[in-house]
Amino acid sequence: MATKTSLQNAIDTALSIVIAKAKILIGLNNIIDELYTDIIIDTEVTTNVLTKQTSETFTYTAIVSKSGNKVNLNVKLTNTGTILINGVLILISNSIYIPNDDYTETFSFVSTNGIVSVSPTTNKIKFFDAIGVGQTVSVNINYTTND
Image (cartoon, rainbow, N blue to C red; front, side, top):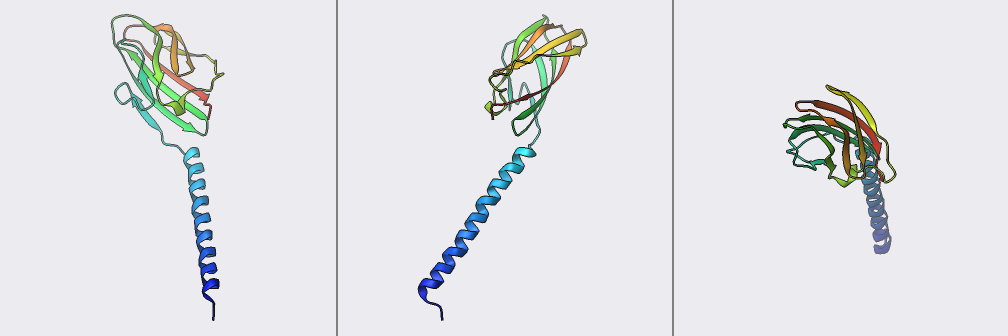
């Protein structure tokens, strides 16, 4: 017959195996969540990842995904106002999507009125070229975060 101490030791051993397994499962699930993230659809109304920086009149729809420290940002922006717009129009308001500190790349895209250059730096998305009245610009940017 087992002693009280040996039974308690057996229970303690079983519990530590269960706890270790639970910790491993939590860690593995966190890795899976990083690899297969949800795709976020954001607008000037929802502002889950991006927010409007200026009072300029425009609408945007953004499709954002992040896997590890890699971000894909696809933005369709339409100037609904009566004047040309450019500069920092959108902020990256969710900190996990902010580009890494030394990121300086500028992307150029063909729009309905010509070429538009865009750069995500720090927490800003800057449009270097004017977006004309009624013009729609679609940009697809890939960058890395600070982790």
